[in-house]
Length: 449
Picture (cartoon, one colour):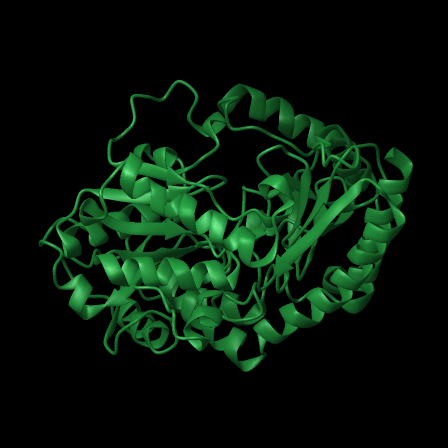
């Protein structure tokens, strides 16, 4: 059986001897601030599976934190990258034009769900770089200095995106931070105050957003409101569609640009190519959209999409960069887009979600420690609590993650309180692999309750 079809199998203690040697080297040559969570040293990967240096086989439910939606070692991607690499590796777009950038921008522009009829694409290298450039573009387009972001947000680790990110553990000792970034409360419905639900909860969070205009920045100085359709690091918390409708109206009423950060939600994960398609379907598409992670099957690529009317207002020379739109990454991205559309990867996400959500909700009924189950498509989170008061149970999550990897399933925590386990498995996972992963996950819950 090929690795692509294999099931989890752990044969050695973790880490194994070869992995231990790699970790010893890592301690010498890498900064300890780049944390290592798992005792796994990857040797190769196929589909949703990886094999470590000691021959252990793992089902990967993290996928490079949302990078591997299309899976590991897709032969068509390898061929596309090889073909481009034999022509040239790099050509900076400010010096000579590489047509792979143009082909990709044209293809993506046809499907990216932002307002406008002539969509343009600025390519970059990372999610943080895309988010930072989206803010620059919004400021240039509006002539305004400020932005609004949200509790629970994660947008990156550059100086500006650390400021935009809510969890300040990612910014320890890095201040002072840029000015003009103001924060509202994200609609975390499971933890809405006073047991609010439905319209009352949405109204509460809309009022919290509008209060920023009174307490932090008048609306006429706000260039953009930036949010994730499903918060990633914040705990896989979806933005309710009624709240997004209210945000869209606030933006329209005040000349503010609505920016969706689809770094993690993009490329099939949500059950659409982009989660913002759900917004477009009801007439509330964003003005600007950022993307990264699964765009190029694991090669560094990211970008910002907006209408030409917005992009044209950006002063020359203020956006761009040496590696932006690297031709090899663009060749891979073109093939990723082709495969995801041809093989209906958004549809795969919905089928995976149906299987997982049914099982997760069974756990919610069976185990008191499972407080909430939520998500959009195959971007799902299971929140663990200690009691009926919804006290976050991060200690249990740590034990579950540890137990799972010992059995061959790679899980990762998330959330403001570290008490959510996130699902970001490659969308090419087989039915048998998915079933095996769910069984391991449940075993880890029962063992550690």
